[in-house]
Length: 155
Length: 155
DNA sequence: TTCCATGCAAACACTTTGCACCGTG
DNA sequence: CACGGTGCAAAGTGTTTGCATGGAA
Image (cartoon, rainbow over all chains, first blue to last red; front, side, top):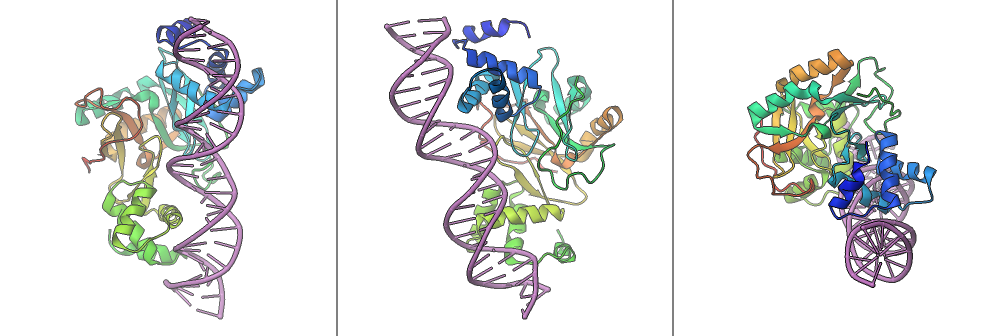
């Protein structure tokens, strides 16, 4: 969240452009957003940036470890900025669409188990757990299509 | 795996068609397959079934609880037949593409934790955990695109 | 005979790519 | 002033839909 992402860009031979700055800013502001939502957010603050640039930039930022994506719906991937010392994973309610961020440590035992029994090294930051809030009325959405809310109960 | 899926279809007012039979058979045979892979498998045993029929049928079968899907790649959903008393979830290696099915009980403690701390009821059957096999060479695939193997270490 | 299911083709949503121009370093 | 980045438009994927025909019940 400091300024060192500029250094990180350059050190990898990437250039620092206004578009990249705007897009990283948008991802940070939105917390969890699809490429399209990022695109919309960027437009709110500046003249148009092309959607393909959003896609290309998100890819670059992800390579640099500045953002990550997870699949929170059956459709689009969702990007979020990375807080280096606060990896989290997501709970996604298929009734109300609520996305909850949960701190990595909650999955620690589970991850250890998968490692011991299956020799599998889990990428917690990419984990998305689907289900329903216990307090969520059973009947809001029949299928698991469009989420209707995207609030947060974050970190 | 008995024949009661025929009854289940009818009891819900659905009709029993050769296409539905072929598609359910294909999903069962393939273990984990995308709609497209199902389509190919069906063609091997019969004259063409339209791809859109595959999509519509998978949706019906899922509603009936005969198949499920999970997102095992960044692209297509993967369908598998349901074994009523053997819910499983998946580990997906992003290096070699190996998909491992793991019995529900392995996630039991984790699921309980999410319920207690977050009031969240996990849908274990939909769970896909991404990461890497510990024995997997780090460098097989750079990005998390196409899986190259789809073997199983099943139930 | 009645509707549900299917095939076909067109429409869709999302993402990627080729190319000429632009602007950072 | 060179080369990576961007905008634009077109092409790709994967999935859904409308409509006429076909077949299960």
